[in-house]
Image 1 (cartoon, rainbow, N blue to C red):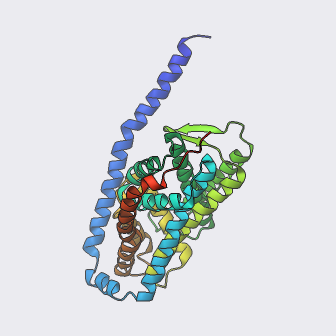
Image 2 (tube, rainbow, N blue to C red):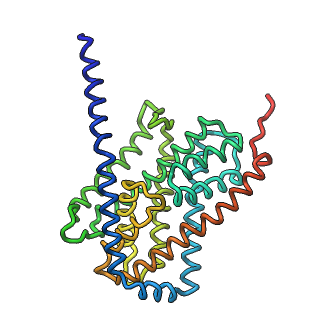
Image 3 (cartoon, rainbow, N blue to C red):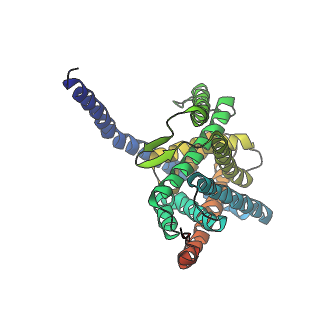
Length: 328
């Protein structure tokens, strides 16, 4: 075999990566600028008096229901890490895990995945005596639970045709249905891999992933999809009753893609721009923005304030909660 062949293949592969790296940043910036323009146009065309009137009209009962759904959503997300306890087979109690999951999620939503999902988990779990390799496994499982759950629920909603894209958009409704089918196939592929794959260990960007059992994978997809459904339920509660829940869920799932592309912490402005663009023909812009502002207050800001207090308490009690190693 010619020795130049592997070198050529490696060189071609690195060239491909360098080309993508070269275009990734400007394309992301272009998308980001487009969203800024869209959000600026939206802000100029809004009747802000209508927004404030809608905010003032919220009933206490509505806010309580939205807050209750938020609490359930955060508990479901924290259960991602409870699966991780079984996954790494380490002696952790739910009293140790749930606070870490809730704190990480609140910081993740508001300050990006690097701060909440990664840095905060490493900090808190290491304080509890969990090894770095096991923390990486918990993190990998949590990410897989969230995004494979997303694929299941988004695949079902998109492929059903419940979300109709506005005329003139480059991604039309038929293409969105195709995306939905692809997401369902990827989810099914994950389950098949968990059941039949002989190679169980993988490393993706430095994060170690051991394929779980089929039973655990099904639980992952169920919890992940449930959490996305609960997020949509919070928004649905705060938006005008004229809107159907499946439509709100579909728009939230589309906005999540835009949020990932832009890397804006909390998807600030992205969520609002997508919701108004897709639903402005169904209800008024003012009522949409008012509902989304209430959603940000209930699902983002309030949990972050609570998580800050929880973080200080966990840090203070870290030694008491630390895993005690049994003598051999």
